[in-house]
Length: 128
Image (cartoon, rainbow, N blue to C red; front, side, top):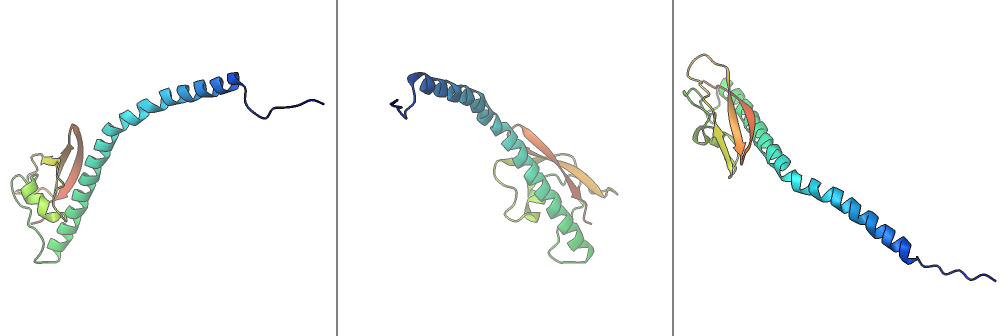
């Protein structure tokens, strides 16, 4: 009778460890690269929230709501002006910039949201 041992040989174990090492070497750099993409996504998320809040504020201003914020300043792309439109204001770590001029006839302006080195653009509707 032939006896079989149900275990693995040393060579099989070494091959599996080598394959796992190669997979880890390929996967680890991907995890380090995600921080930049996360900052970009965060800036885009805040820019989207700001654009949405601006649309709601514009609609509220059009129907005559007393809680609507008037946006008719020469430079509306500041946290002091746009922050109150968002619940909780502009999140910490984010800055607003741009030269959005709502004092003239412009219907909307573009403001830049910055998180670290990543930026995103938000369309803000002028509410007069």
